[in-house]
Length: 319
Ligand SMILES: NC(=O)c1ccc[n+]([C@@H]2O[C@H](COP(=O)([O-])OP(=O)(O)OC[C@H]3O[C@@H](n4cnc5c(N)ncnc54)[C@H](OP(=O)(O)O)[C@@H]3O)[C@@H](O)[C@H]2O)c1
Image (cartoon, rainbow, N blue to C red; front, side, top):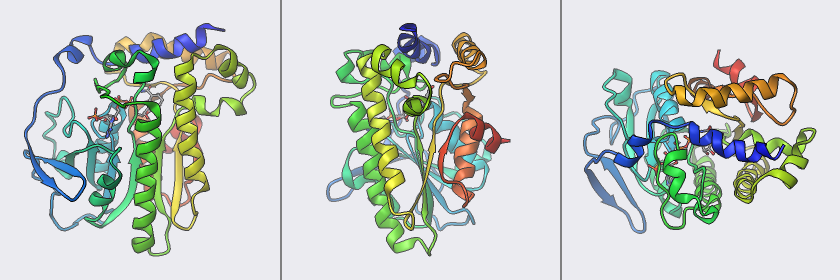
């Protein structure tokens, strides 16, 4: 059993692109900088898309926080294909391998900025016509774990934590900032419809509700996993207790996220499928990054979708 917590970290380590990519680091891009009073948001200079254009999509704009990430990139692509004008915010700005020249990619605007800064997200929303927010910001190994330097290997996109990157700041604080901004935005723009806010949580956040889950967490999970889950639960709790007139909470709880493009992760994915199949109640089936992205984007447009989505709902919604 003790293997499970360790396995969790190990599996995440496997779920990433070739290690050499991390050593090479993210590709360099230049940016135009537009500074407001206390925040800096930089727009990729190679972007020709939705910068200051008028909205031409019926679906409006979608803000994806962490659009350079493994999950965030898939969400941005899916949303652009579905007709949203997408704005991505992350520290790197553009994704590491953004050679995508497909027509839908021109509907993605990449901004470089830090979601920990209180006013960054509110500044972006001032552009108007936003119809939802998807939060994909995260990190798998934080500084306090003593393993932060290995996050570049654990992260599916080679994201590098900086000083002060803890689960509390990167997960909880960025989501709280986004919720604060979303609530203010909804007060002025919601037209009697709650503003959809979709948060990428984790299956393990639901352990207390599963037979054996609390035992695993209390006795076998490493300390860093407990802090990872505490941050996820803080966001889930606040999102679900926010005014239902202003925000529509959508919480996805994937276990492992995988793609067939990264075969190195498949043994780990197989182990999770087997664990779920033999009835371990605290092991959920992995989901593909494409299915999860589909479900998250669709949840924004489907007004009846709210609350927690586990792998069953994610797979059903993505069909
Ligand atoms: N991968 C999995 O198997 C898995 C399983 C369950 C849940 N999840 C959850 O899914 C979410 C996405 O995971 P992932 O696998 O896509 O991770 P990832 O590839 O490491 O992506 C993390 C994203 O967060 C962004 N980010 C980090 N610090 C930021 C900051 N201060 N301001 C703005 N953006 C910031 C990163 O961009 P920059 O580096 O450019 O800032 C990157 O876009 C996370 O919340 C994770 O906990 C993942």
